[in-house]
Length: 193
Image (cartoon, rainbow, N blue to C red):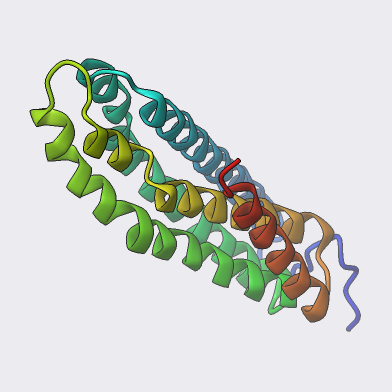
């Protein structure tokens, strides 16, 4: 059966009214998860930008205080996105190229965050808590770590690329090209100016 790209296909059910309602609720929670993800990415961007410009320890501690908040927002956002996305795929869309590539991209976001950001942030915490007054050069260098900015921009590129996939619903080649292009744009935006 040929299914239009832009609309999910629902199998007949005993009570057909339940599937569309559950699907609508899942879609709402999915969008809510996406909003949470972008809020967290925006807060991380703001925090990293302000940390790299912090002149003293008090200012750095204030901006570093956002990271515990992010540790709460990110997991809930991912759970909402993945659980509802898998549900919507199972009941409405079936296996599609854009879903598979989007799912791989979603799994890459926390992997990049863990590999590139989490360890550096954990190592930075003691440096900031022990600092007094004006930050010395090693502390300032740690706060302006380019790997933190690269990690964030890669994850933002992936996230925007996934939203593109969910909107346009391209085939395999289009899906891979889109994710590579958006992730590459994220990486290029992290280059020092």
